[in-house]
Length: 184
Image (cartoon, rainbow, N blue to C red; front, side, top):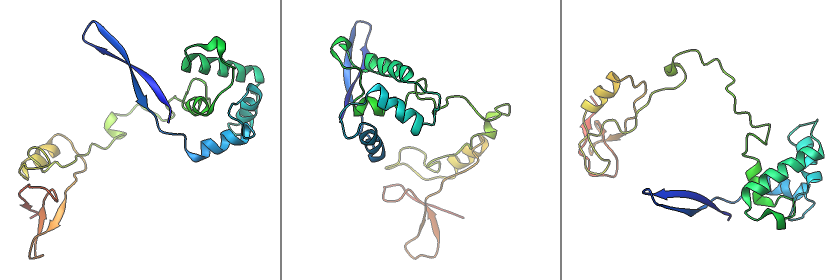
């Protein structure tokens, strides 16, 4: 698992680097890397160019374009670049796939007409709106549901459970100490 450095700042005077874990590349990325490196541990500019043309469908990609990508990735991901070969390892290749400025199939532009109000694009929903407080020991009530609807929530989530006699339905945060409310 690759560890990357992330910056954090504490107060006004302390600044340090913090290691963050990133998951391993998925099997399809590992397979593509192995295929285009012919089982090797490093991807050359020629191999990356072939990947760009074959997989990413960038038919006008040149080896010089791949070299520029290698240069940018190795400079951004490795601290001492003068000792590095300008190739990508598996983690570098995996990172490349998420860089929208270098990986052209990832388009960061909006392709819908965004002239309507925001509520036309998103559904305002609620989660556990029947609770008056925390999920462990607060009360269940219809008051938070009414308030959510008044604020414009379009979809309410209700956890429905049968009562002990199975003759009625209760609104209840299951497996917690919240007292139930009858549905009707």
